[in-house]
Length: 204
Image 1 (tube, rainbow, N blue to C red):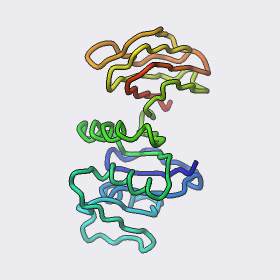
Image 2 (image 1 turned 180 degrees about the horizontal axis):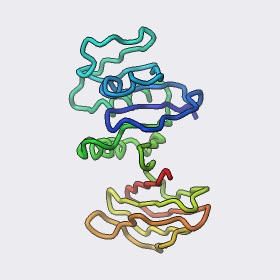
Image 3 (image 1 turned 180 degrees about the vertical axis):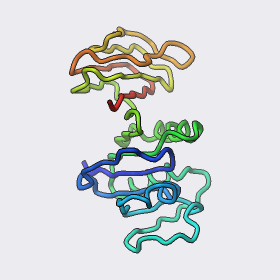
Image 4 (image 1 turned 60 degrees about the horizontal axis):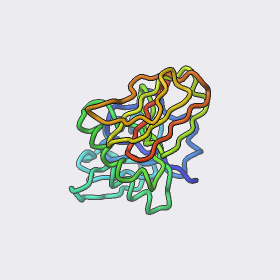
């Protein structure tokens, strides 16, 4: 599956991917380019957005500027749609959290619309996170701190390989969640019937 590396305008990464050859494209929103990416050695193929952050700063001539002025969508959502039009199905996303909490929640809201169609994995300076499929098996997890956060009601959740297992349990915001659980096995399983569940995994 061809994959893209996408930078959006949140907290700048302290660690960047070291193997850029795994990506078909590298892209960023205009805010991400202006605020941090231009200060690195990473040269994106595309800068995407309404371009309100770029101003008159010089841009590397090899970068294609994609002007997407639609104010009914965020630059993050417009980036997903543009890159998907190029056949991309998998995204590694940096800068989606940190700084402004409303920015982070807005990005989660966008991801909630598209995660059934595209493989969206987010990385920040503390963890990585993604929406779970109805059955998710993860490997090499022993010792990781893992949180399971439902964005809608998650029904009949069963998890194995954790310090605090759950069996046919419902999770819901305002009710039970599985926060800061701990993997005691290398292989863990997360299975549920329906709902929108985000898995957060510590990067340490």
